Length: 559
Image 1 (tube, rainbow, N blue to C red):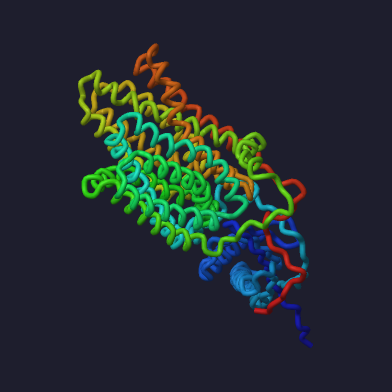
Image 2 (cartoon, rainbow, N blue to C red):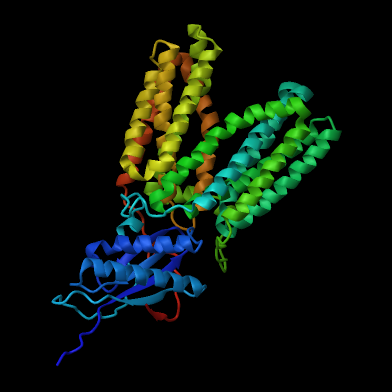
């Protein structure tokens, strides 16, 4: 008599999260899954989310796989179970986890089969989730970036950034015509001071309202402000409209800056966030290159009203792209009673004080910005004048640096996830410091341009890697506050570098101060190395990943 043996069952349970990335654990056991099933489950879940148009979401897979079953059989059954669990969970929104059983196909005769014992256990935190800077454990070819939304983000930011630089050139030129140096100072202060101050409030508002609500509302208001400004400046030839428009524009840019900075982690998984940042950095580098001559040309063609109209058109395009990028992004749950907005504006500084890894990554980013600005803005023109190289040498050196950085950023968009994190953060940082010092000692403009191109190549890889590591070190729910502090450091590095190194150059000379800047740049890789060694913080009292949705009961579906 043949006794029917119990069938082996692969059991998958999927929980949705509002942050990108897929984690996998074994249900009811701390032992690793056999035959690399964690990678199979992770790729299947990511592919299912992408095919459903939800690549900006993430989740956690809890997988039970029977032992002593052939690898090919288990992989096929796990793929079906995970795909069905993801589909069931997405169909049942807003309900939470769903469990799906997939019976494993009958193994070859003679193979021992062990009946599955369904067990449930809260998902545990995997190594990749606990340490965002750990080496990727997924297949690099697995879908980890929502390319459609990332394309919309890059397109919209290219339009609005180029329009903003064009408007800056046009307003500065118009202010010179209306009132000279005093008018330019007034317009510049009206545009920059409110923006710097409101970055902190913009980060707090992003954490409270969510990026979608803040971006769409503030960008829509900016379109109206620029359109009204185009009408006013076309009929009034005085300074006060420029000051008022610059003030309003600076306030709106300060509010929306952190909201735009938090979007990339929604669009790319942790393993591929570096690629997304590399692509985004290309836009930030190309915007002033394209926007500055565009602003000069618009002033010649139609004056300031035409430049404002062009900036408003760029904002309209960004508004449409932002609506597409942020569609479906959840709004943070309102707290019953929390701190005031004024108190929350200091959350970014409190984060730096409380989280060592985030603090050291902030130091690494700030040191590199501080070290690069004075040589590019002051030392290079002074050295060209002292050696009689002419202004053309300055343009060639800056163009070589920009070309190297753009090429490196393009390569990073394709290959950044394959480069080890210590290489991107530490090794390239040491190379940047050495290259900056070499630029101070080279004897001819041709060698200086070649050295600048090499420094640009390293910068195009190091810069996005620093931003990525900083974003990955931010605790969940605090990205807006952290990015506001990060943006404020970038804005503050320029005047601080000029104020710090210009008086020093009176005593050390141009070459000595340039070498001092190279020493400051060396602080960046040292701080990055310390950050990599710092242990990642864990939220107290939590044994499950943050923001995992839960449901009162599970739904079991046979496959």
